[in-house]
Length: 425
Image 1 (tube, rainbow, N blue to C red):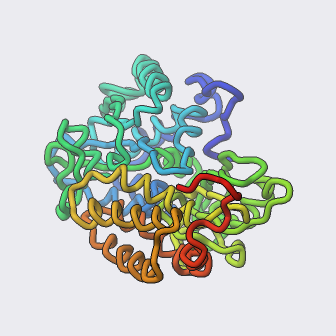
Image 2 (image 1 turned 120 degrees about the horizontal axis):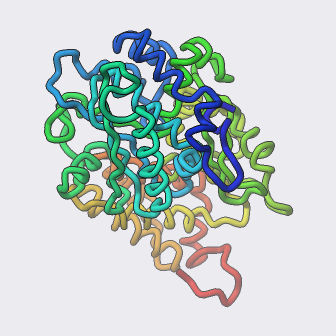
């Protein structure tokens, strides 16, 4: 293991334990031996892609901040994971918070940032307390703050506790939230690397992405690429496995590990007497996969080839006792509730999709509902930010993979999987 090598039962790794495992050596090397351009080039060569869902090459994003860009510059670590089935950042920060802090400092040095901000969701209050404590310990050790390790490089880090909405995980909405504005997504361009916080250059990364950075600097880009099992991937990946499996949890595995292995070997397979019906490979905003697609390589390119996305790498397993209409309804209810309401396709489209799926479950749907749902899903893709297009993914794949089950709801006047006498809805 790389990212979870210092994971301890029931507690975090201390600053001393992290340093004993080689922690902060990469920061020291970067500050003493490498230029900011050298660091950017190493990260670009490593093939590191953003682990928060978009998969954008990290090194290319860093190079989006020009050397002559205005100052001060900011760096945000996004720990606002509110998507159903995704809990890798919580596991990572509970295991080894200094790994993320070191990654922030190296990234800050590479782009000339003087202020780091860790954006934490409200439900992660304990993580916020841990981070505040560990940042202070790092500050006392001259690892955070002015003139770090007597190098001339200065960068402070603060913890920002979110107000608590899923939309705050979207980069531009997160920037608005930090500035005390309503967390609506912002129009781009310009990119946040040009005009982010207070219209100044801002680098924003998921915490898992930042945790990879010290290992790249310490061991080199080729070593990092060699960790992957697929030629198109690089590094390891934290895969969350939940749902109808025997051993749900967060597993660090080589990028490109086959989905079948993740579910049946590491997740322990399905519970006794159950059979796999479908799964979401990358969280709630990805498409359902059928049992015939389980040999896909779990990396960005592998899932792209079959028309899907890696997303956050959160595998949600559904068994043969699951009503797929109800499962999709559960997801659409979440997205509908968490919409910021800024644009019409998201505000109205998600509520309309929710209402149609509820009628399917209740038995009041007509035979034109599947086509109306499909048209609604197409409309969601015209939204202002990725929230509604992400919500459209499970909805569209429900109609593609489980059309017969959807029609059964119409023909039989409600969910055919309900037990006799069970209340509808």
